[in-house]
Image 1 (cartoon, rainbow, N blue to C red):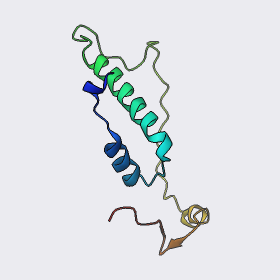
Image 2: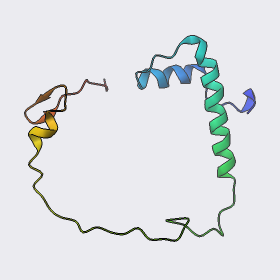
Image 3: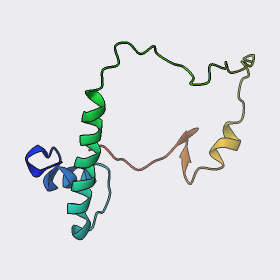
Amino acid sequence: MSNKESIVDIPTVNKIARLSRLNIPEASKQNLTNDLNNILGFVAQLDKVNTSDVKPLASVTGHKLPLRSDEVTDGNIEDLVLKNAPESSSGFFVVPKVIE
């Protein structure tokens, strides 16, 4: 993909990094920008493929997956689940605030 067709630029990479709380070294940002533009270029190529005569598939093999019967349970393992959390409060996971 040429620079003329670039969708992602360094400020966009900076914004994505900030929103996702990633620390991307300055030396890697140009390579990441190029990689993201290449990926989006491939996606744009896929978007141009005519699939109007292609039947939707749930499986490429045609085999159906066996179903299991659903069983209703009360769970009742809150203490066991919360035991794995670094921090919990009133039966809920405590996580850092990520949206300002």
